[in-house]
Length: 285
Ligand code: L34
Image 1 (cartoon, rainbow, N blue to C red):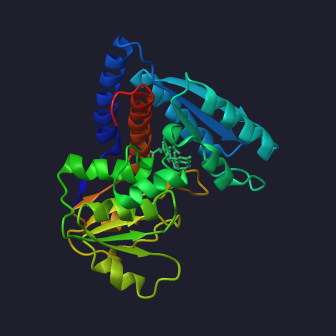
Image 2 (tube, rainbow, N blue to C red):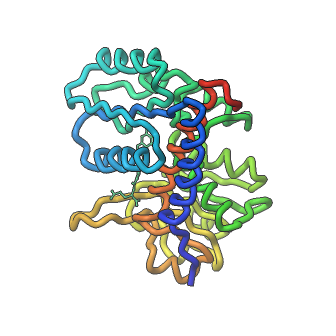
């Protein structure tokens, strides 16, 4: 039986710390603020953006929401980003992904001022992460590292396997675990012998976007299993990339969906917003 790593519990601890720091900053006349841009009507994105707003309220961070129609043009979106870049009262800018198909995602991410890039998706920030010298980290991988720290899970020398190679999760996740001296393997849709590779892992991070992709026969006894997937099933229920019921019997630690990695993504965003506010007010890194 695995120990369940509760994203609710860990994220609450992180958000509490952030709230304390925000209170202190406000005493010094600094009010951290986050602008979130949502384009279109994706129902999942709406839920996530709403959860971000709630977390801002909890932490005392000022939040601005820009809800733009599905038919928004690239030019309009770029203009909004530019306006927020130049607005000194805005510390963090996040454009919720995915964007509608007609919009160029990378162009938008490239336009966000690196100092305000609380997702750490701008090429300049991605570069900092490659080198291992950074102020802000992408929210999901960073939230997962926070879970490891909270539970005292040591990565040094461990065999870590990331399934998925996205710029948002897979690639940065691998870099962060590498920095902790893990031996990291990234698997993806073209990987041969994926099952064998995963079955040798001490830590598995699943970020593929396929319900129950990771089955119990792929998991080593005592492995740590982190589930990044949030798949919406026909019955409206959420399902991760891991066959939770079966893997839970073999793993030493496992994250649930919902209530696992998702809330951590949001807690880390709060942390990054405060970091951005401090940098912009010249209060250290
Ligand atoms: N720019 N786009 C940008 N930054 C991000 O960091 C994200 N991500 C991913 C999608 N697009 C993004 C998020 O915010 C995924 N993500 C995210 C955020 C919050 C939650 C899940 C994913 C979340 O709140 N999850 C809840 C369940 C919510 C529900 O009911 O659907 C949970 O307990 O997992």
